[in-house]
Length: 172
Image (cartoon, rainbow, N blue to C red):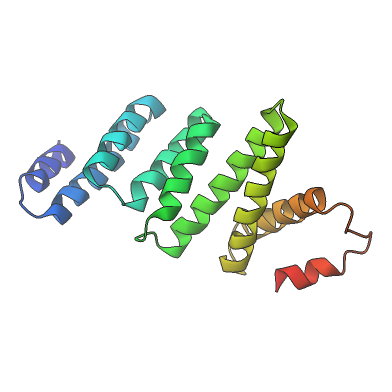
């Protein structure tokens, strides 16, 4: 195959950037060719070991876990991806969205109320950042705002009134 020969050629280069591109190409190839989350996930863990600090592999891993729905792993990998400095804004927003969704899902599964509450508070912090940094005309903006408002209601139920004039202040 052409992709496999390109990967081999890129890996044989001395430049670390070429080896990074080889991992990206191989990830895309495995995703299209195999598509099975366990096969792709195993490769992505290897790519992270070879390329620490590259947000693209954490982003891919969080999306891959979304297909298998291993929520604790999805949350962990997305949080690690947020720590990477090379993430472009769209990837950072996707990682924030992933952490908020995973935290929400985990909070609903927990039997311990304190642990569940900590996940909700984590989701709220990520959603605040997402609403603040996100594009005002983004495709998932309404979903982000919905989850932000719902989480704000849960956390600040005693401070809320039926008209919610303070929600406009928070969105600025």
